Length: 119
Ligand SMILES: [Zn+2]
Image 1 (cartoon, rainbow, N blue to C red):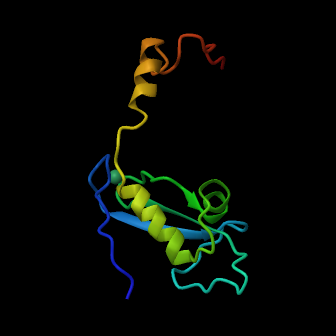
Image 2: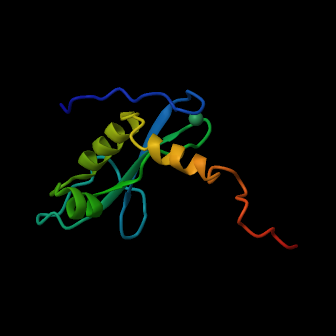
């Protein structure tokens, strides 16, 4: 049996997480036990989402994983597992970018340099 991962609660509302997987080309939902083709040429995407508020974790797909992270031959279960790991991987690696933008008032909405919407 596959080792289980305990999903962290939603970072916004602490609600219960769900995980969904899709065919990368058609965007149709795929089952966790969908068999991969013999030459592993199907691509899947997956993400964790909050059942209560709808917040979504990082969208993971096997095409990007193979191209940018050199992770190959993934099944639906593999892609869902990586999505679960990324949902659980809470960190502040990009905080310096937020702070740099804050100094330039880029974290305000609307930004000062954006034109007012005209009705
Ligand atoms: Zn939530």
